[in-house]
Amino acid sequence: MSPHVLILGGTAEARELAAVLAARPGVRVTTSLAGRVTRPGALAGDVRVGGFGGAAGLADWLREQHVDALVDATHPFAETITANGARAAAASGVSSVVLRRPGWRPGPEDRWHLVTSLSAAADALPRFGSRAFLTTGRLGLSAFAHLADMHFVVRSVEPPEPPVPPHTEVLLARGPFTVADETTLLREYLIDVLVTKDSGGEATAAKLTAARQLGLPVVVVRRPPLPRGVSAVSDVAGVLAWLGFNS
Ligand code: NAP
Image: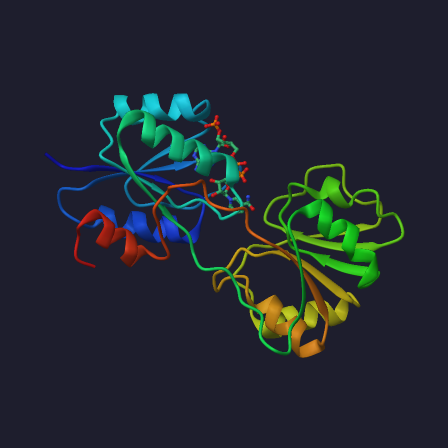
């Protein structure tokens, strides 16, 4: 019987994995999206959209849809769905793995300040500058909303959710971005500090290179830890090996 693989998606790696699995004869692949983005783009295989109703709902879905393997390829900061995926897999007896791209690493010339949350980033920010480029996503800007003396340039794929800081300019854009683009942006908006999550990956790393070249400080929000006991791989080839397929 064809194995059914459920991918918890919302990332470039999830899209790549769906394409590779859908191209394999005899494999059924379904990607699940939260439904946050209005135009998510084409995906290979089947797609379902929207929450499952917590870990119990996801466990029911795994059983009802006869899922054989669960791959959590969600964003490193999508903490709730990752916890739910681990619980649902354990409850339903379905094998699971987390596909987590490696985090970014600072070089000797980087001026990184590591924090553990968006609110810690907001606490630290006024020490580093007064014009911040905020690339932490459209949710969670409320953590910065009280910083009325700072100017923010926020870049996100979809418009940010209020409340946002009083002095905020919004740039709607989707990566990948080049170092040249990022350098121009940082100069044009007179940015003196960058704020980012440690998302990892190539698509949005150019801002870090640009900040390094301009000597700017970067406030980096660390990743939340993975739930205890989960297996993790760092790329699509790792998932294929975990599934017992040749890459
Ligand atoms: P989250 O806080 O971990 O999840 C909140 C709830 O959204 C979950 O409990 C679940 O609802 C639903 N959900 C999340 N991902 C889902 C998926 N792939 N399929 C079905 N339901 C899902 O998630 P988030 O941080 O809001 O991220 C939402 C999605 O955006 C994720 O799929 C993630 O890969 C993507 N994304 C997130 C970020 C980020 O910085 N957080 C960045 C880029 C992309 P139920 O409990 O009802 O099942």
